[in-house]
Image (cartoon, rainbow, N blue to C red; front, side, top):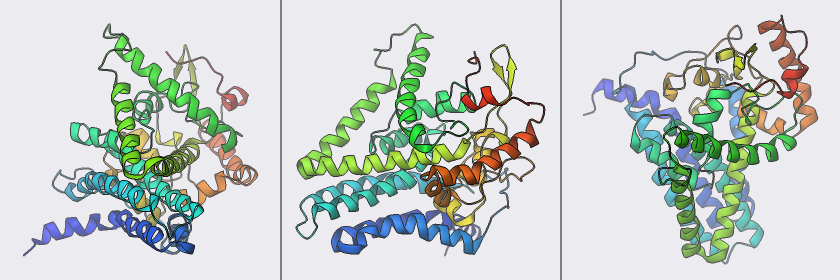
Length: 377
């Protein structure tokens, strides 16, 4: 018989496990074809948006004194997702590449849906895992990122983004008035270069060249090559094409979220190459309950940047007095980001109110809009 306290801990974590329900939808799309190939994007984007509207917000905060035992089922969630995604992606490559009942367009559509999973869930879980001290969890983060050919995200996120968010040194901070279609190609190039430069500088402090085997980029490239080779072994060039399809969609999903998370928010320049410290006010917060279940509280992004070492169940919700609030959850906001005039209409007035509330002493925001201030040291 299950002890009452064990059952209670499992039940509290259960809503966050809903991501596993997306896996059967991928198989339904692959085996049935037709209209079912639309299931994953429709469910992930539109159904969760509707559920957010019906269920509402969750502004309650977990006890920060929770023990490791209390967090067991939350940790298990992110760890177990890795083999589930690995098996799902490559089993589907084997099946779909040779499926005679699917047209070429249907095959691509199935893997568009797979990319929605690996981007919305997989990269998000890798983000949680890479922030942990456990070597196992950090290695599992690398496996997830290699599955979408975006391994350098770990170096960029930990060494660049968290340190320089809201400053000129952070490529991921979307500039005020910058549309997503300008942001996306810029960030694809800049994040790769900044990640490599950060690792190179880290090695240089140890008097090591970038060619040292301790450079994680060699591990990144090896893992990614292994993923591509496995896709080829299972599905030939069709399998490689399907793998690249899901990877591209996953990266696009990630950068859409990155665009939303910090749009127009900047840290005050203090002079001498320094900026104010990172606070909850430097990230957009969203308290929509259902999408936070799917995204393991990623929308409590204000607290994540304020306390990066907190596991996702302990992330706190911040009120409008402490952090700027998105009008909707990420499923709605990422769709809006794809329509720049709509995005600016919704978000630019909020950025202006944020500036008036948090930094009324700054009257000329033009340098901040372009993020052309002196680089922090």
